[in-house]
Image (cartoon, rainbow, N blue to C red; front, top):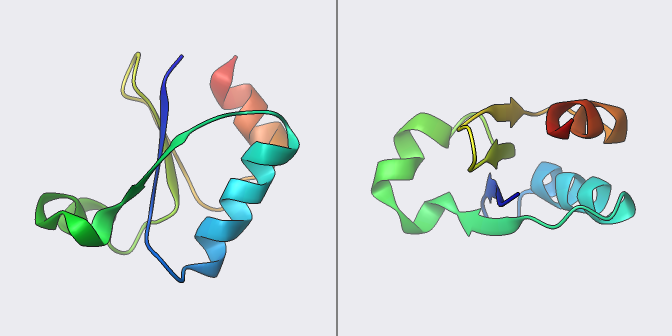
Amino acid sequence: MKLLLYGTSFCHLCEDAEAILQAIGVTAEYLDIAEDDALMEPYGVRIPVLRRMDNGAELGWPFDAAAVQRFLA
């Protein structure tokens, strides 16, 4: 399943989210919302957000490893 992780540079929460994904062996494509005005509006105050591309479901911060695993099940 393809996953996107929306975030921005220098976002410590985004770094925490990436570390959680890495710790449980989940790969997500990182998408910097600062480079896309269309993404800044819906995600600017919500990042990091993990999005499943198969069904469009989103998991917003805060989340932990258990929440990610439930989200992906």
